Image (cartoon, rainbow, N blue to C red; front, side, top):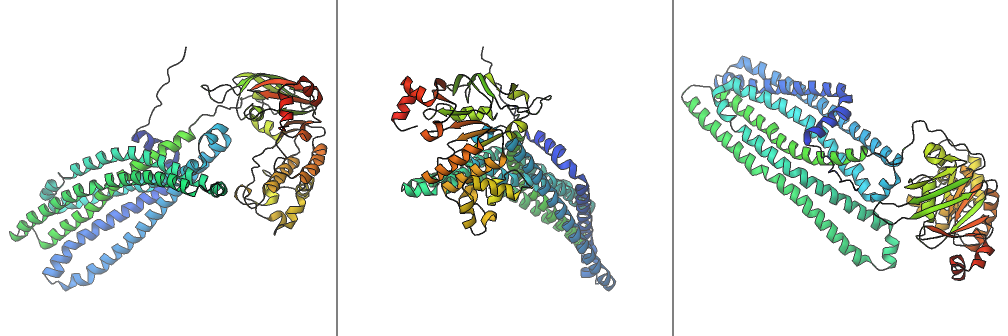
Length: 587
């Protein structure tokens, strides 16, 4: 019976804010207390400056009292300096908190991706993932510094300014503040719309980033196939959709402006009209009017800022929801609590009736694979593309778990041992060399912070790489470039082989290890491989006869099943798929 899939719970704004506060903001409460005290200083000094306007106008400008002229301006200047310093402290502390939260989330997300299931990386294009780390993280920073904490600041200031309004003229303040709830309603209504738009915009930004990364990595193929116009048309379509998503966001944001400005205009017009009559009738002074009017102008700023705060909050919460969903993702490949480290005795590998499909809805990539590799044997896997050879490697490295059957090394089920110890005992050389934007030496000793240079050089010599390395400008300290872009395909392949030699693991997986090499280099490295693979268990995926001829056993895979096995001459005698591949030159 198939279970009905449950619709995943979608957190609301308050749940996301609560999570952000508990997990990311609360640890920085010391800095936030300092920032809040600075906000209070800003509010109090602003309140005092507004209150000073009344005696400045009434006693100096109207009455001409010279005594106040020497006293009030210096006091006003002192309050301005205090206000400026408090604003600096507030801004500096909030910025530090915001950036530390982003740093924390970036580290969390990277750790989740790099230590989690491989499928989570492969399922997303790299451009989309990079968008999560840059664009969407900055939206989250804005949520914290400009929205959540900014809302606290603006609310405190608004309350202080409103208190000043009531202190100066409570009757008029009651009339004016009736309009404020209307503004709040508009802010909330527009904010709800922006949340959905922000999700679509962030999706499209990720698609655009993935497209750009793909284009720049594949520039040689684009030019070689004369596909510049084709790619330009794709770019125009993607950027047009991105433009429309951005414009829709800004257009919805802009809807607040005429409403808020009109309400503010109504508020100011009412104030001028009522206060004007009061001044003319002698019911209030010019100074009191100016104090009230200035406080109202100042109150408008945090109120208007709150409208922008809510818009930014909804956009940032959309990003927060996506990032937290990735951080909370539970890995399928887990390590048991009582798991022990892998202990290698002979290096025997067993595949016991293993079946596997990458997705439940897809056809099986492997079906009932059952074979044993004795310790220190060399086994070759051959077969047409898509037969399941690389999938066997992925399962052995425990990047995925089989749906049926199990894999054991020296009798130890790999599900019962730590993945770290499993992978430490296996060295891999694949067609995707995985060269990083670091020095040549660091690439060979990848993962070893305190590497032995003599060991690095020995590995490079064994892989026929020392010659080309010494011809580089900085030799072993030369930078390989992104994806090894500053090296040729053969040079990258030599580095990958040198890395496996440096690792010196008891089990080696070679996936077309010499595919990018010329015949001379391959012949040289084959000799080195003979020495390297001695006293090791070796599994080889190969299409070259020279690679498989001396294997202890050859397994032929077809449609995810083992269709034939034996040594080279035995398989030729069977006149099956192996013979066909041999005659076609695919072995």
